[in-house]
Image (cartoon, rainbow, N blue to C red; front, side, top):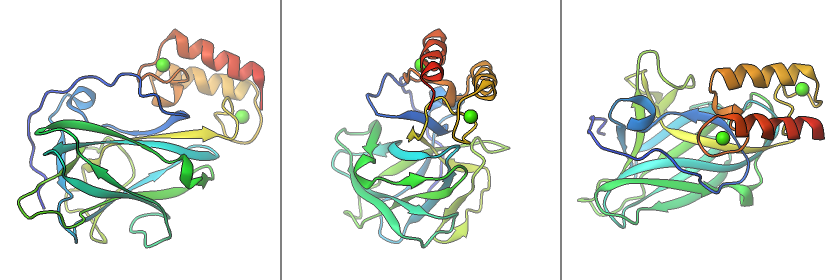
Length: 233
Ligand SMILES: [Ca+2]
Ligand SMILES: [Ca+2]
């Protein structure tokens, strides 16, 4: 396996056109972290990474965004399993992710809507990135970050064991279609607690305040939340 650092230059994310609202974010770009992206080899069958994630409130998973580095035509398998890492739970979703560019950072936005994965508040899943036996000279790597403490709280596993460097994480952004958009506290109704929860997220520039999803938190998000708040559940 390789987890070496490699300097690269990336552009800040633009609007992605995904459905749903951002719910979980594990930073992975130099633009996100101020550090070079960490790379996890997903070339070979037998390389199985599991990044645990949770969902903050009830909803259906709609999209997952990850980044890769490598060559055109290289691919790996991205899957989602239910349960905390290490998870041998049911594979709820799996897709082959294929790069279309040569020696560059590439972003992949994966549509999860067809899998109709319903999540409870706080429920744990794993994002599984595994090699699928492409040509031996081929090296495709999924991008992540390292920091102390780690930039995402849930652990990273490699081949069934906690990864040796506990500060490393695979990067991703997870979008969900919440059962109720404005119900940030997740108990099924909309009241002033949700308003204060939004204000706190907004002030912290948390990804969950990105109600007009474009990768940044600003007054457009405030007005989008207000509209959702007035609409109730
Ligand atoms: Ca609520
Ligand atoms: Ca926004």
